[in-house]
Image (cartoon, helix red, strand yellow):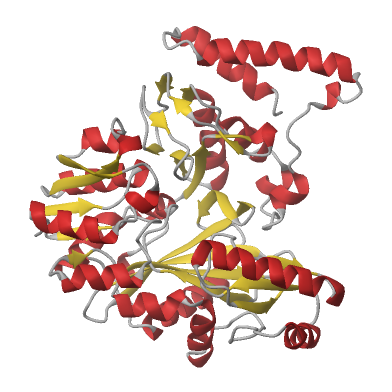
Amino acid sequence: MFKKILIANRGEIAHRIIKACREMSITSAVIYSEADVNALHVRRADEAYLIGAAPASDSYLNKEKIIALAKQIGADAIHPGYGFLSERAEFIKMVEDAGITFIGPSYKSVEMMGGKTDARTLMKNHNVPIVPGTTEPITDIEEGKKTAKEIGFPVMLKAAAGGGGKGMRKVFSEVEFEPSFLRAKNEALKFFGNDAVYIEKFIEHPKHIEVQIIADKYGNYVHLFERECSVQRRHQKVIEEAPSISVDNETRIKLTEAAVNAAKACGYYNAGTIEMLMDKDKSFYFLEMNTRLQVEHPVTEMITGFDIVKEQIRIAYGEKLSITQDEIKINGHAIECRVYAEDVDNNYAPSIGKITHHRLTSGPGVRIDRGIDVMSEVPIYYDPMLAKVICWGKDRDEAIERMKRALCEYQICGVTTNMPAFNWMLKQKTFVDGTFDINFLDNEFLPLIPDKWKGQSAEHLEDVAAVLAALIKNVESDATLTENHSNRTNNWRIQLYE
């Protein structure tokens, strides 16, 4: 087995990989930027190395420096986590050319699935359903208008090299097409260095369903069932579940078979995820493949008892899959809430600062994957996710109730988080009965003025807001909170969201 793995990431995913390495008796080495000098992953790893200045381009995205460091410290392999360099084909090839093992797929698979239009063509040729639309980028506005009319409005414009909701525009009419097309191209160029845009039919009220795939280098494939990822804000997932309440057994068989075929089409190995859109008739369509570990992998681990990160390491080392499809069963239900340092009431503005108080929740079926502890700094340079709260139950109802309890107990002070907003989401009828779709938050979430206040005068609301702001500021600046005081404050704030 590998002796040392360099983890080319930060935050909670770096901490998660460190734990897997420790259980496998592998030395964990991490990189860190000047902004992360006191970060949790730096203190928990066996070895830590300053890689560069705070901006990601100078540190976590510095391909040459990361590979040089791996060679210098004698790392056998590099684990990219997710984000940063995890889906950069050129980086994977550089790692392989340096004689170091990349813990993930081959660069060829990433290239094949990285271009959205190429991936759509590949899926179409392997009988994996795709959303109606183009398989080549649109280069001419008039050509695009004509194609959109043929497909039928509304349509989606999408960046061919994109993901994460960037370079996407919904178009409802021919009049809207040109300005939306130009904005999509500009955004695609800004985020991905490629302004190619293609067209897809807009699926009304879809569910976002994904299937976890794992394969070895010997042609063995398994799926770990599906995840429900429809609770999203601006195309970014907020709550994930496994399995999906909307997928029956018949649909599950078809869905997972299509996902395995999609992975086989690009000769994939290691862990990957096939993302699908599913309409109200349970017809599903290939959306994209994430050629890496997913943020939401813990919910799959909770219902299967299968450690995906350890399996990634074993496959990269050259071992065969440790499990067969017949051995993988669904046990219970799991839900994950992503905890972000952001101010929901202020249009989700990032919240930065120092964590002054941090009390974990625990109990049966509760797991916290975190990248922070007391005195951790939350910088402006990176994704604002602090932790993930994952709860398992014997069924979905128990998982939801357990999540409510866990969120009330989990305390983070020093920055504003989105945790109180989950209390509202988990109580909504459409969430509880499973009829929600990817428009759930856009259509139903109103942050967050209680009904009993809506008739009050503006002056009264300003007075109340001033009092609340003062109280919250006093609480969050006090690093010596007593447990009872902290409990009362946390529960009081959550009441605002009911």
